[in-house]
Image 1 (cartoon, rainbow, N blue to C red):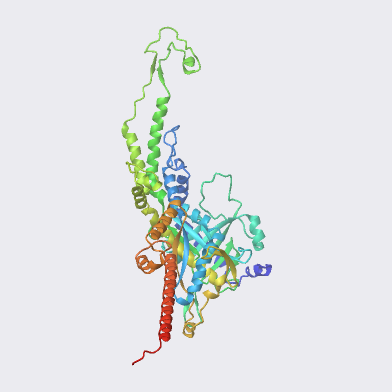
Image 2 (cartoon, rainbow, N blue to C red; image 1 turned 180 degrees about the horizontal axis):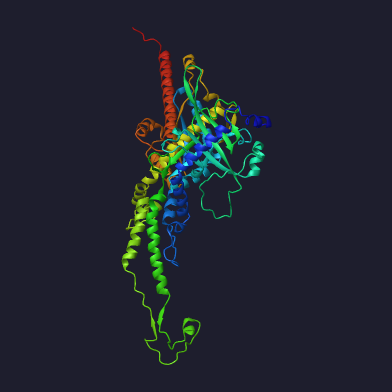
Length: 572
C-alpha cells in the first residue's frame, strides 16, 4: 500500500472513519461480554489438558499428594490419532457435463494447494481444539504475499479466544458482524502501517488468556482488530445482493478498509471466511462443547481416589510413634535411622514408646477407582479394543477386527462431522480461486500413470459460461459439488484396502472375459477407489468389444471372399 493510499484512508469523508470505528468497538465489547462463560470454560479446559487441574479444583489438605493420571489425556490422544488417520481429501464434482474438465482439474489442484499452505498442521491443531473445547475454527483467506508474491488461498486455525460473534446465533453467517483480534508488537505495527505511529497505543481491551509457562506479558502490545461486516447493495438490474466488507484497525486508526479503498466488496462470495467445526451441539451458539467437559468429572474422581490411596501408602511407609513426655528414650537418636544404637535411661516399656497403628483402607476405595476408570472409558468411547489391546480371552483376528470396527463408530461420527466442515472449506477455496486466479498457476500432480506432470490452471473455467446464448442471458457461473474422501494413513487401513484388491483379483473381477459380470457386482458395492476400478473395467470391456467386432468383421470378409471364389451356382 502506498503512502498516498494510507493518507487517503484516514480522511474524515470516507465511509469508515473514527465514528464508525467507535461503533465497531462497542459491538466488539458487546460480543466479548456475551462469550465470557465460553472463554472461562476454554481456559479451564486448557489446564485440564495440561494436567494442571489441581489449580482449578484445589489440592485438598495441605501436603496431600497431587496425582495426575493421564486417562483423559490418553483418550483425547487416541481420538486425535483416529482423525489424522482419516485425513480429508477433496474430490470436486461437476453439476453439468460442460464443467467436467474444470472439476477434474480442481480435484487435482486443491490437495496440492492445501499441501503448499501447510493445511495438515492446521488440521491437526484444529482437531486438538475440537476435542478439548468442542469447537475448531478455520479461517479461509486470500494471502496476497503468499505464493512468492503472487497470492494464494490459505486456511488458518483461529483461536476461539480471539474471535467474536453476535451472541444468540447458531450459524456464524447469521452474525451481524465478526471480529478477530491479534496482539501486535508496536515496532512491527508501525513499520507495516506508518499511519498508526503516534496515534495508536495500548487501549486496554480486556482479553482472556491461557495460563502461560513463559515469562511474557501483553501489556506493551497493541490489539489489532479485523472487522468483517455484510452489506446489502443493489445489483443494478432491480435486484439486491449481500456483499462482504473488511476493515483492519487499531484504536481509532484505520489501517485498511475495503470500502475506503473503493472496492465493491472484499470477497465476492459474500460469506464470512470462517468455518466452525463443533463436536457436541450447544443450542443458540455456533460453538460446541468437547470431551474434556464430558470426562473431567470422572477424571477428578480418579485423581481424588488416587490421592486417598497415595496418602494411605505414605502413612504405611512412614512409621510414627507415641512417646510419653519425660520418657527414658533418647528421641534424637531414635529418629536418626543412621544410628545403630539408641540410648534408653531406665526400663523400656510400652508405657514409654508405642507405634501408631494405621488402619488399612477398605477394598471399596480400590473398587470405586476401577469403576471410575471404566466410567471414563465408557463415556469417551475409548475402550481397550479401540486401542488395539484385548481382554476376556479374545484371540481371533477376525473377532478383534470386528470389535475394533464396532468400537470406532464414535470416531467415525466425529470425523464425518469434520468432513462436512471441510466441505465448506473447499467451497470457500473454490470461490477464492474463482476470484483471484486471474493468471495461470502451475501445480505438480501425479498422472494416472504414476508419473509427475505439471498442470497449469487459472479461473477461466470458473467464470460465467458463454457457450450457450441462453445460459449467457442467465449469467450462469459453473457450480460444483465437493465429496470428501479419506487419505488413509494408518497401516491397518492400507492393509485392509490391499486385502480387498486381492479378493477382487481372486474372484476374477479383473479378467477381461468377466468385465460385464464384474461391473454388475460393483454397482452393488461401495468402497474407496471404486470409481477407478469401474473405469479400468470399462476400458477392458471396450477393448473386448472392439476385438469381438474386429473378429466378426474379419469373419464376414473371409466368408464373402469364399463365396466370391466359389462363383455362381449352375442351375443345370
